[in-house]
Image (cartoon, rainbow, N blue to C red; front, side):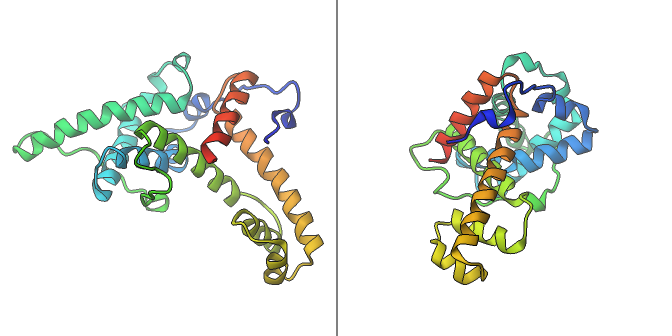
Length: 229
């Protein structure tokens, strides 16, 4: 279980994701959006039965459109959490994109704006979006998995310790971890325990940047854990 009190009883929320994206220069905001939301948005589009390349084009064009029209800066944070806002915006964009594509096929209109984000390219995985899931659930589950992956990648520590922790997350036993890292089993357990604590604090801090209150943080953490199950 993730403990929210790790941040202290008087945790403040001065810079939610809304504020962060508004404070950064426009291109840096686009980089933040691409890093944090590319995979979730991509999974959402794929669940609407678009093929791989078309899905990539839609997400690229959508992020570029947010930048070009200052959509985030003009949106009202009072409407709810950022993930809900961006999902609604993408849903509307898909409708507009479909209409624009139909016009292009008939010989009129302009092609959607497209940018290339090769470093965050994602492939669709049925394990992350079952046939029973709605596109909204697929997006939320992909968001949770992506946040976990990014947080693990950003962990700092000795190479052997990080290797041990990644093996632990993959379900390896400590005997196997010890053999492959060269550490004793007791040292492996200590390294894993410490990195679990670091990962927990990193995840809580990142999720806290997307909400405005302690109650919202607890609710979001509960949903995050549920989406990973």
